[in-house]
Every structure is written in structure tokens, then in C-alpha cells.
Length: 125
Image (cartoon, rainbow, N blue to C red; front, side):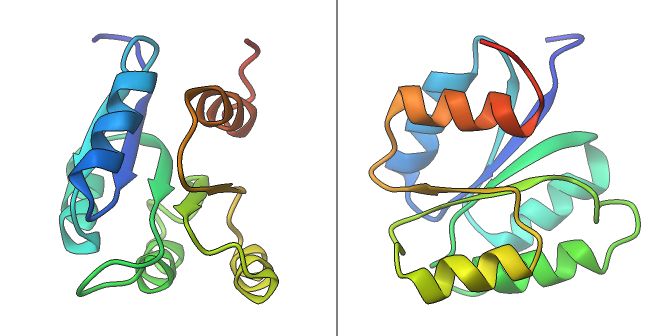
């Protein structure tokens, strides 16, 4: 695992986390969190390169997590990709205003996920 960039996936649905892990684990060190609170504790201990974040989660929403992230001087520059079923243009616009890097609509397809992650990290396939 040495040398691989760490990607943090935050989603309350285990099936989505599994899909993300399976698709990305060959190239990245993938950390999983089922809540925003858990994700924040991972950020304290890991040099995360990218966050894949669901919007609709119990407890702390993706937008609330994003606000906490942007207020953290050590983590505010970590790129965030929303992975969500919200395709509403108002939600997309609001997410863009708050500084997310990209937006992936569920259901997650391996090709789209890999392409967007590589683009966010300036990798080439």
C-alpha cells in the first residue's frame, strides 16, 4: 500500500462503499466511512488525497460535512467529488458554489468513477 494515494469514500450505503472500493483499490488506498463523523476522524489521522462524498446521509449530510471540511485549515484543499442520486440542477449548482471538484450520479459505473477520480487527481488513464 506504500505510495498509493488515499481516497476516502463517505456513504451510508454499504453497497456503494463496496463498489467504490472494488473499482479503485488496485490503484489507490481506499478508506471507507459510513458517516460524516467517521470521515472527519479519518481525516485527522490520514493524508487523504480525494474524498468521494454522498449528500444524503443520516446525522451529518454531505453539505454539512463539506462545510466542516472547508473550515478545517489542514483539510480545506482536499478535492471532493459528490457521489449522489441528486441530479437536480439546483443541488448541482449549490455544490459547485461550495467548491466541489466534480459530481457523479448514482448508480455508480466503474468507468465513470475511475475517469472522474483520475481527472480530479490529474491522473491519466
